[in-house]
Image 1 (cartoon, rainbow, N blue to C red):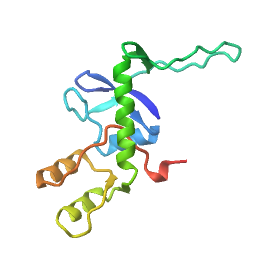
Image 2 (image 1 turned 135 degrees about the vertical axis):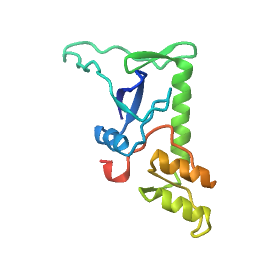
Image 3 (image 1 turned 45 degrees about the vertical axis):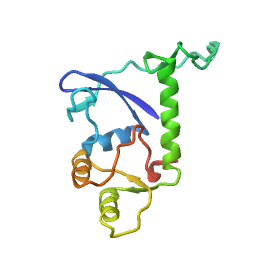
Image 4 (image 1 turned 90 degrees about the vertical axis):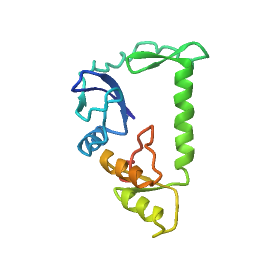
Length: 158
């Protein structure tokens, strides 16, 4: 996973988690990135401080998981322990939901429609759709939902 600081043309800053730099570029090109505050699709990477590794002779800091009421480090900000735990539980729930799901990639919209209209057997699937395509599916009554955490397509996995 790679975390980028992003910003929209309205000046709102936010983070995005991606499987790779190519994953970010692909999602940007397909119009899948929007500002969570204003919904703008004009999103780009914000300047980030470089990550400089510690010297090889430096002693590593002990990292202890955040307890309730404490904070856990994320990117360049601290996050309350409850938020960290909630995000972990959400990631686990998504992984469990996708366990029996098939990644159909760019064929997601077509296959979702076919299942909705009874042209094929229903089965749990996930894949890619542009914001416009996803809205069209919702308008037709096709049950779809965005994934809160990005996933790497099979061809991008090592």
